[in-house]
Image (cartoon, rainbow, N blue to C red):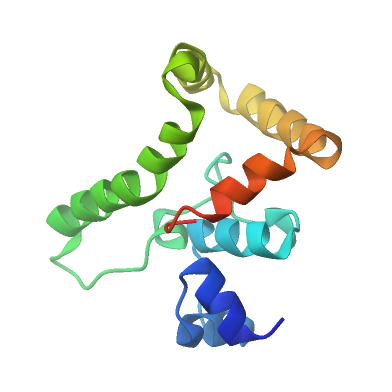
Amino acid sequence: MNVRKIAKATGISATTLYSIIQKDSNIRFDFALRLANELQIDVNEICSASPFSDTIKEEEIYPTLPDGLNGALDASRVKTYLKNSMYPLMYLFGKNSMPDVDNLLTSFYQLDDEARQEVVETIRLKLQYHRDTKRAEQIKQIKGW
């Protein structure tokens, strides 16, 4: 697989991929997720910064903005991320699963950092042996992933 094919499959520009490969810039976690899904590898192999740990900085998830532009553009990027990535993902669950998804998210939010990390690690281990290939393929079809 070459950079152009990966770019097309992930929706990440080839220029951005080359920059990531040359380590000229930090890899955004959402890009790391898309690449990991496409390459069928663990996201931690290409990105050590996880939004589930205390060590991540906002600029590691979002590109750094020029001074004075942070407020409105941050809100816009969050809305775009929710619209293009999270909404389609939630749609895959279907309406009957929404109460469970809501319970998972609200419960996860209430956990302290140590417990959150344990949940993330448990999921990572479960995915090694219990990944549903059909569902994994459906996630790849989401433009933002």
